[in-house]
Length: 373
Image (cartoon, rainbow, N blue to C red; front, side, top):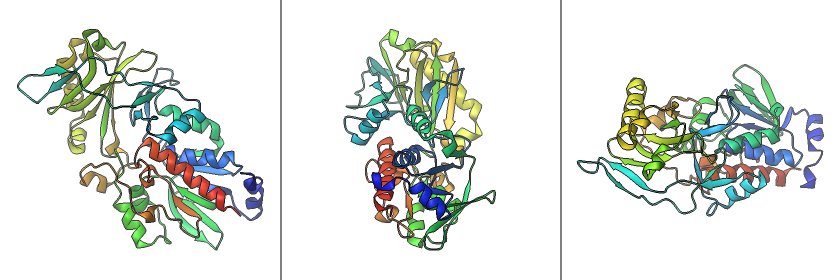
């Protein structure tokens, strides 16, 4: 996109700190940032949390260098997700099949557990190194100097017909030509002052659930996937819990072995009895997979409902539903095209999923590039 070359110098002469500021260093924000930077646009990504990745997080090995289990999303479907397939190719990231061979353990559907295979989903694969590999690779391409963590945005306001002022809660002011908001919509609506935003936009943001924000995920790590020796797939389907759904989560290198499960307890119950939750998870796994399951190397519970950068009181008060495609005003351009929203729930393609995050991140960046004067 040759028209964008040299624009950074032009913007600086006009008094901008940055060409584009992106609020949120999740997958959509980083995808937008890399797309813009590769076209010659100067980008600053502001992340309120202490780490990047948004809802993509992982358990790392003892050295902190290798992701061994996912605490957020796990699967992608490149066969049916062309944007994911293209980005995996672009970033040279490999995938491997989700292990699903053997019997699952099914409990709570009768007086005794029973064993039978459960079908997998066609085209479902895992990313080597987990989705964290996407985050790490994008961040490396972007460069650490272009990402700031602990940067809490308090206000977005117009400064004349050309400039957007981004005020941090520290009082620091950053001026940009354009802004991409790539953070959960409900969090933005309740924490960032946007005096230019029409009430209909704020209403739409508040009515858009943040996918997985009230969930908790448990990851249990062992030295090897011993359940496979007994002809078990590592899957559990349970009506009694505390894990209602469990899958084999062993990494591509086959060591360590791992399981992950979705916690069926409510956020209030999880947070009031964390010790009991851990004990009951290990008891459940032991009942299903044998005594070896009671002695993992590590048990990590990621409770997203405790992270105010992800969840709001509204998310906690409502039933959990996968986000549908939201109203068009979430995808409109504001302040003469200088402000857009680009979190995954805004996407018309696979809202809330990795596919949606990549799709909305790059499409927002493309719009900015096509309209640069």
